[in-house]
Image (cartoon, rainbow, N blue to C red; front, top):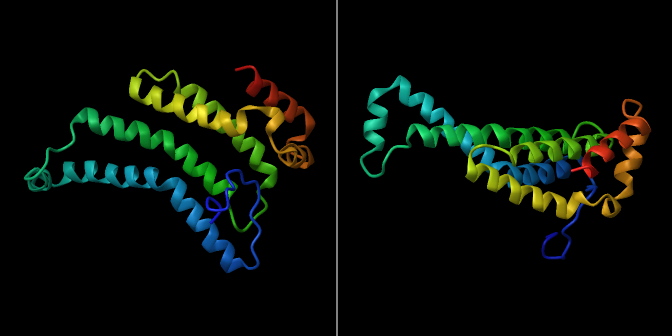
Length: 174
């Protein structure tokens, strides 16, 4: 519905009841985290292959089985996406206030994406560059950020203004 209404930037969602909140959050988590969950499940099949020698033989009838390099790519991408999965769970928690953590999580994502761009795997690095471009489109320009993100950060007794100044300098010195 948000896409249909032309809303592409969202800071807060308010719903009328806990059950509506749980449904909305579960939908958002499913949309954002399916790739991580699929790769995490696929990784279990690699482990299962080691335990059951017939498993691989049965699955190879129609298609080829993933190579060691394929499994390494799955693990690499899964480990990378796990950070985003965990951030999503923290930011969209339904049983606690999350607005004060939002800027901190944005900063963590910025760092993850910058680090991933220098990965030795060229395809992985290219994916991270595309993700960082999209991140920068919405969060890379401090002047375009919703000021409430900064207010919530400053009002958090664990972070205050010094942390905000430091994090903003790190983000803007890319």
